[in-house]
Image 1: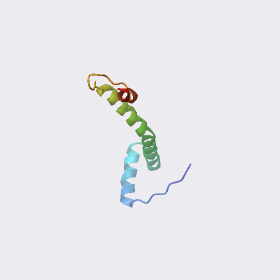
Image 2: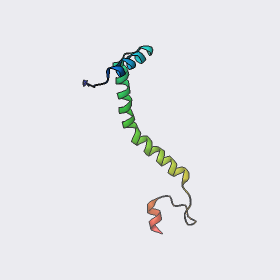
Image 3: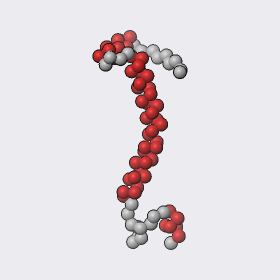
Image 4: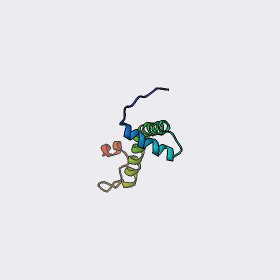
Length: 78
């Protein structure tokens, strides 16, 4: 595990610790969870975006020129 050092204004840390206490957690755990969520978002984002774009293309596919082209190769064979 890698250690991370951050520098924050003391007032911000005090306020964040109060929030952590209300959530029955400590500030270190909340920061760790947030950074883990960021990393997961980075890993999932491209594949999720590609899947969503692919689904959109399938849903919005329309016939062109009276023919329902299903692939790029078929389009260029005409």
